[in-house]
Length: 293
Image (cartoon, helix red, strand yellow):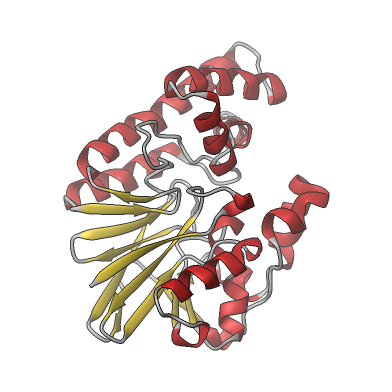
């Protein structure tokens, strides 16, 4: 089995969003589609591996956020079977509410950021539950329910490697900094840490992140990440107890993460494109608000 990390060059920037092509003989599977705005880059990347769109019959989504799954409808329309968590399937089949929600956030940037978001025919969408397996040739892909970043999140296990979507965080190539993926509205620290602990206990040899690519030190990565999740939650809770909300809270969150990251300006800008700190601050703030109401 060979895993190819496909750089989708999000916003013309390398190393921000990845899809992964799994290839074993004639058996192929694609994990993540990225957004519609990266469609051409994805097709070009597949072409470099001798793969055409018609060759892709199985597409696996870790979750339905647009940077991971915005292009799923196009693949379904071409006849690919799209696999997704049960809590996300309805939004793949009918993305109207997803588009409406995202438009409230991104406004007139929707098209440039995310491109076309097409509905998937219902018969092309398959719901996967925890522990269910899909066999494609000699490739066996097992779905793990991994909430915390989102309640509709799956990780995919192939032998001793795992494709983690966002549940193992954001770690760009050549960097040690781990950015906590905490976008609203479903950041929940307790199940999040439990999901990370589940991955940690599996003792994987490699992880493959959507942001970005192969991680060859899974145990260290996951151990650090579980602590990072708790730290941002504790920090935001403390800052909110001081009265910080909204923009002021986001500024404090960004300043804190900027200090922790030890990144130069160019590296920090890439992380902000992959996982904006203001957005993450809003996700943690929403959780704290709900949990203390």
